[in-house]
Length: 335
Ligand code: AHN
Ligand code: ZN
Image 1 (cartoon, rainbow, N blue to C red):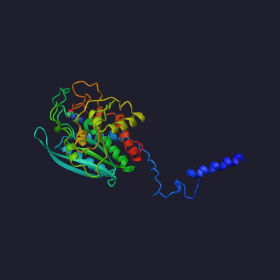
Image 2 (spheres, rainbow, N blue to C red):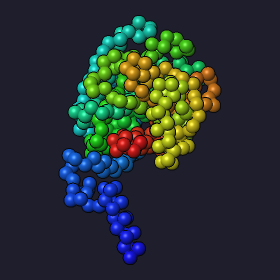
Image 3 (tube, rainbow, N blue to C red):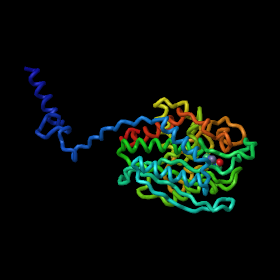
Image 4 (cartoon, protein in one colour):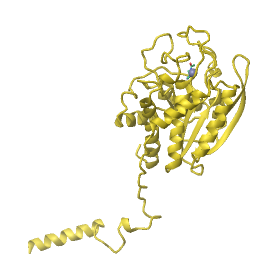
């Protein structure tokens, strides 16, 4: 008798708590407009490092992509054609700028958009031009030219492969892939900061709507044993993005590349995207922290040694697979 009373009291408690079926359908049976179920996560595509490597090689084969040169023009046409073939909506943002030495540069930022109708967007960027002078203090050959396999082509090659994957498997978030021009015509040796990243400055003043919520710059992401230290302006302007991406990269097994060490602040494309357009943007860039010759970068930087032999497919994959995972995790709300 006592146990029946106990059971009845329990029943009353459950009714009071709303746990007993009162005739309304359980949440799983509700129509989609009412239930706020999270979207099922889409699988993260596999980054093809051989494909990325081929895109790096093809850029290098055009010759140095110095602004105003024929190789530059041919490369621009090839990049636009590739991105269109990967299903992106492509726009060329042409501009003229005066270089620090007085040269008039005719330059083009290439903007490739996926899901242009979506408000919530991620920016992925890299520069596609190469430096007109091999003026590193470590270069003693005055005839040396910068092929820019790492400095330029690596980031673009990775983003082309990301674009190819997005064309086959579109995430539930917008992506703007922006290939910036005239990054590397700047004045070296502590010269004018605004002489660098002229394409980024133009883009930052003319960002197409809807404006991306955050951004990732890839610069020199192709060399063997690259070390992506945490660059100072990324930490200053986009600390949450740094945290998320470095944590994700480490969880994916790329901790040898994404090291948790601070590096100096540099003026690179992301500096202007952060300071002019207010889009929190990080720079994934090879800054090993033990370099010689005065620069914070690797020894082949701005020398004739920046050629295809420097490139390692494993580094390209470490950059590209983390970018793809960032996009798909962010789209699923699990980054
Ligand atoms: C400066 O040396 C001021 N900025 C480096 C940005 C850069 C040049 N990245 C590649 N090449
Ligand atoms: Zn450079």
